[in-house]
Length: 109
Image (tube, one colour):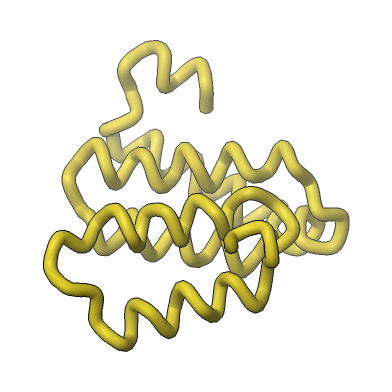
């Protein structure tokens, strides 16, 4: 994924498909073993959607990663992206989601 990123392929559909294929194939193993290197796949996947300006999918991937690997830094990155992406006053459901992440991983606070 790093090589594809450096080649400028992050915004292509094949990049998205490769991320999805890796996540689908190794998700349970990564979760059970808390693979820190798997964090990078979720990060690449979220950044793919950021590069093609699909904010909802980017946030969905950060959330999925945070839920899949709660002991990684993904909950922190998810909470940061939630807070960073809302310029309007933050709604109750956004506050609830950040609280959920804090409960799941104290590092977020």
